[in-house]
Length: 449
Image (cartoon, rainbow, N blue to C red):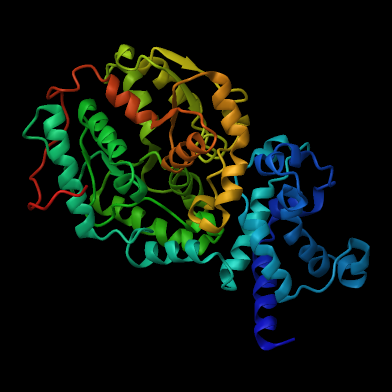
């Protein structure tokens, strides 16, 4: 073998060996190849070819495990239909394992509970460590680590965007004193949005700020840690995930807040709420909550008052995989929508058995797979159409982006918004000074359109 091939194969084996804990070994050993996971996969249902079957993707790692890490596989590889791993094999993994949204719907339907997403993430980590990950994902991760944002959003860009949002909200709220509190030490809540919201959906950021203000809580944003996105999750690489998450964690500690609040970014919430304690081997010294969880608490305890007449059109809800199936935030958005809109219509199936929209797992950030991504959204498009709703709400900016494209691609004609957009629109007295915190306004800057 050439030196580069030896290095790539050695790296792959090292990654698998270090990850072989009891759960992963069980997932590798227990699969009966029944194929039920295929019927649960939106990619396979839209295009029934072998490479879209979850078990086919997971077998990239399973066959290496059987060949190198089991006694029979080392002696008689032909028993498992395996052979020595080559760099060409790794090259062939790329299209297979990155055409997956890691939604875990297949895990819900697996009769023995195999988490194929964990195996596919392992394959992604191998490809990342051997320099074979899709260039756009690798670049976004690099920018997150080096600049603090996968879009390369600098501190100056962030401050300028916030000044514009302040101007918009002063006019909308009829409150000339409104200002976003920045770097407030000792606040109860630190709110961190995602760059996709700041640049693509600033209205959603405004909605979150209106909710925080109306709740009358002591909150802040950070001028040095302003993007909660974590591409380490998409690359399946805990070390990259830790490096990005550490920035958020250290800033929350520096500001001595009680709760770090993520915006409607599904994978970012999952990364900080569930993955980070495992990555760092200890609980975080503060709570992590999604803005939807907090808004639900505030409505239930009477801190926020909503008028459903503000949202008269029929609304349906798309469960984001990372918030719902991977995060456990299931009833909170439904309670909010029940209070904020006049007509709420469920999709079928819903909750933990929802169909993935097709944009997760980093798929939306890989332009080479656009056709596959839109095709894989067929199940979700059919669900939306069946409800007859005019508005689709979701609690994830990435899902909102994908749903908007699906609406155009399949001619659905629906408006795609965030849950917080509808909540903010329904706030009673939203145009008056009804609480919140103000702070000194940062220096002037031009408006960003």
